[in-house]
Length: 307
Image: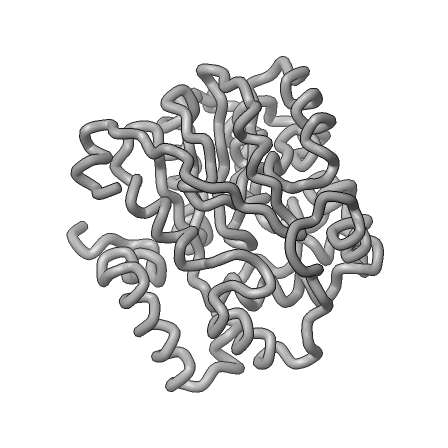
């Protein structure tokens, strides 16, 4: 879909299913959308839990007891089975907040819902993914690989060397997960739809209050002046790290070190200590080839060329 088509509100249509050790995209085929649904979409490790926390606190808070992973399920994660998950989602009485890691063409897209897409520089994504996979425990790998219904090969533990992980992830476009570039590209192409808002991890780091206000405006939420201070507190990285069991799936049972491992550093640029200038340049050149100059610039900086 071109940006011009998006401006004319030509909504995308699902063209395929994406199924692997993590995903079962068919669950979206059976979801009955509501007029106030909020969909939080990312590639992975791009600020998903952070934005879930922000929106969850706006919808149901401010409340330090909110368990965001429970109220905001990853819908296309294939465990638990989709019949179990759909029943739980349909039973929710509050404004629903659903998470997806799908590219647009594998998603059922509804004009009823509001879509927040969060992106992050691929180098930062890979460094965060390495921590995620290297510290996942045996139970995490067992659930993903041995639960019936897996399509394709299992996911294996990463190598000990993060540079080796980076080479594999970057050269094979997201392996052992799904394509990074098609995910970014598919959401960038529909950025002008009235029910889509792009958010960038770097902008959240630099101006969380401003980004939160923009998200609230997009979702039609008007927190009171008294609520903003508490919402800011509960959405700060320091608070989330200190209360990680409130944010991590199942309280962090799938990671060595528990929930505080899942809520890791929340910082960008760690790759600068490891990647050579040539390796970094190679990544940036590929970003332009895959996305075009404007999208690549936004992905790297959170800024628009024509702004």
